[in-house]
Amino acid sequence: MNADEIAAGRARWQARYDAARKREADFTTLSGMPVDPVYGPPEGSTDPRFARIGWPGEYPYTRGLYPTGYRGRTWTIRQFAGFGNARQTNERYRMILGAGGGGLSVAFDMPTLMGRDSDDPQALGEVGHCGVAVDSAADMEVLFDGIDLAAVTTSMTISGPAVPVFCMYLVAAERQGADISTLDGTLQTDIFKEYIAQKEWLFDPEPHLRLIGDLMEYCAREIPRYKPLSVSGYHIREAGSTAAQELAYTLADGFGYVELGLSRGLDVNVFAPGLSFFFDSHVDFFEEIAKFRAARRIWARWLREVYGATDERALWLRFHTQTAGVSLTAQQPVNNVVRTAVEALAAVFGGTNSLHTNALDETLALPTDSSAEIALRTQQVLMEETGVTNVADPLGGSWYVEALTDKIEAEAEAIFDRIRQLGGDGPHPIGPMTSGILRGIEDGWFTGQIAESAFVYQQALEKGDKKIVGVNCHTGTVAKELEILRVSHEVELEQRRVLADRKAGRDAAVVTEALTRMVEVARTGGNLIPPMLAAVRAEATLGEICDALRAEWGVYREPARF
Image (cartoon, rainbow, N blue to C red; front, side):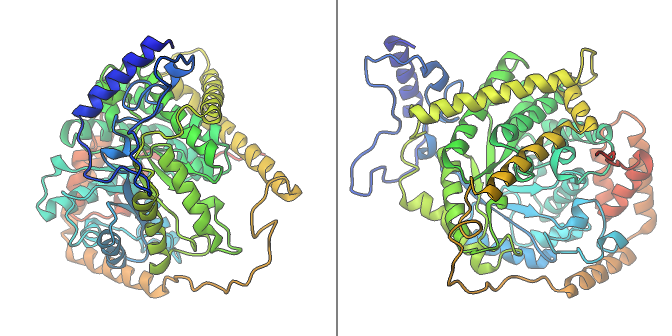
């Protein structure tokens, strides 16, 4: 890019920056030195890389979505939390919000994630242990008691039974008196990554995609600010993928959902802004920053050039980040505070829109109040003390960061080509990327690639080529054993008692009628959200709704592979 083009870009950025709202804050260094809101090539210079780098708030968005960076708005502190029953988790949410958290992120227990009620035999011993138990809309009411859902953005990390859980959330908001058309938040709903990595599915892929398409249609029409899909790379990375694989598989899944929306006749400029992303921030500082910058650039280019988006907001890749749970160690767990801070800083330098920081004891158990507070304070120290919010994309133009961004982008593009090849030459009713994803799931290609990457890394650890402090180097310590949070078995017993009372106190005939109507709609091309909402309002449970659909659609069984 020549000097005149760079100067013209700076002028465009300046005009947008001047017109944008900025926070009232001190944008100087600790010593009081003023800093510019963005930095670029010296005046009059040329830089052949700059067409790929650009300015903040301008296509291809390598340097961020907004001309102000974090001067306009800082990232949302969105701590992931959930354990025991809804009352206990509500107390944790109140603590997080009272201590300065900006949004909530719900962790559900394993029975809920699998669409099972707490009294299901398969739920035995699992209720409330890895998240909060939610059986019905009544639980959702307790979960958010005293928390204004019309004023707080809430993220829910659940995919297989995401749609009925979302309906429970809407009913809880209705019962608060909220206008649900104004709700803002995010539902994960990403079923592709379940088949690729996490394995929390209910049905075959096609029924899940039908539900997701119904949800996209409903939200685009009825709740325009709500984001019905958070395409998740986090679980792919936690399963053992490389950074480039995480990026490529995640964006490919996102392209599949774009194809799903288009196949439903939706306008990409209307539904694409409702897609968001969820990435892992691992401990290799610069690799993670490059990954986030490449993600924005790839998404913008594909949405414009492949899928025909013309609205700026449809080109934006907005993402939440969680620090890497897989990087935490049971050995010398206090070291996890350092790892989490480095990972959080990488997410911030990469321009994350919201962030969860893991607690130091999460490799051993759910976080205690104390460790959860340290995790929250980690973000607040970064935000308030370090000056990282003063300058947009402060590492932009770094020879290393730009070269790494280009390299990760190139690796991702090669993977996209491979996925599309998996789909073959024949047409697919949704689209070519979707065809490749489904074939890759069926053939075990994704799981095989991730397993190979995980094996290579494990070999490097065992040889000592890669180091983990406290595990294969610097293993001596004076640290004492941690006190950890333990969820009492009484939680499960109480949850089952409450569920039994709720079932006994409702109108069973109304529940049966609502479930029957829902299944009837499932047999047609109608949208399933309205009849599912009716079932939830009648206090049908999560297990009852999912079991009715299991009876209709069957249950997915992963093929055995050797």
